[in-house]
Image: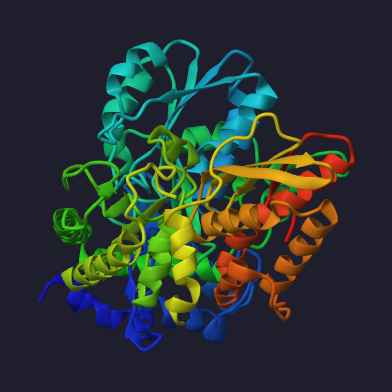
Length: 420
Length: 153
């Protein structure tokens, strides 16, 4: 039995029906479903040892604190970090990137400095840098994306220079599926003295990620995409960078001593974790990590590569359908975005929903990337370990229905505004 | 949910064969509408003569619902006085928000099926919100305006 069929039973939500039909969930790039172990652990926290961390003298508080720090250690080990203190818990990737922009960025980026991004970034890895650049008078530059949906590495020579302070890029595109050669780019960035931030929201859930092998300086990730609860996630950063960075939010838990006119701060990671943290969800993210490791990241990657190759092959059966990004499942994850010539992505998603199939339609928080391909929106099917070839077959059948519905009323030769 | 309620024949027809596509230059009202949810953008042009809509055109891309709604709207407002246009806008928005439909809405009545799909209501109302915004700006002496589905309803 293949991995998808084997693990499906672990995910209660995937057992439900929608409108009397089997739910075909193909939107894991937006958020993943949760295994029973995660659901049970969430309830167990509130039922058995709900207490605030890092302050109680009593036993359940000690238990909660121990489990909280244990989750941090699991994440550190999972990502190949040098020590647990390199993991800062955040609400997810967005907050992690904003934290770096607001702290390291303000301390290190000055007028005339440059930050290099890529054209395939999620808005969460664009807007924080626009805010910083506007504040500091810095300049944003973008590594272009080729027609095939890869980064144009030939542009690095002209983009990287002595003004480059930071190179920030996605490890795996949430639209194109492209897996970027982070190590190669990091080496080039370090050669000019720049720091490297990796948006790993789409890679950590699907492939073995090791911060040392990537030679990153910062790496941001989201718990809810890696089978954990919403509101969990974090930032990994080199400890010496964290030590030098100013705090993010001020408040309780992050201080050594507070006087009326000044305060001193704790060491990382606590310096960056003001207030009561998201205790339950962060602890349970550790349980999600256990689950992923139990299955094995390499097995998950292989399974998703199989599904992606199968989907790419079968999508060719649909007339007028164009897949964005790499057409082969090489250095490519399981996010498959596409357009159809006779129908808008919203209508594709609507008709598929009628068949019990959940896909995303829109710009997927990547408007500049869509403009790069001269479209406003696309439909996206994305896979995780619990998907099967049967799910892909359902998608293809659904798309055939979409095509029948809209091709019938669209016997026009004229260009009706591209897709609509 | 029955998709047939959403994708009525007349809607698919307007989507595949949109009426009044194109620019209008010069125009008295020119307004851009955007739906930040999906990135759809729309430009609407209206030319007036003697207090009536002489011509209306639109450009832009969007889903079947927004394109069909805009196509039908441009047909429906031609020849109407500004007061009649405003009354039609109010009637259409009322229909999309669950009020009883008057029987003189013609093809537009086909869009009431959209009400069963709340996420799509903004697709149907985008051009109407834009039109209303454009008329307000025109009344205030401006010839261009911008709006989004987040500013009107």
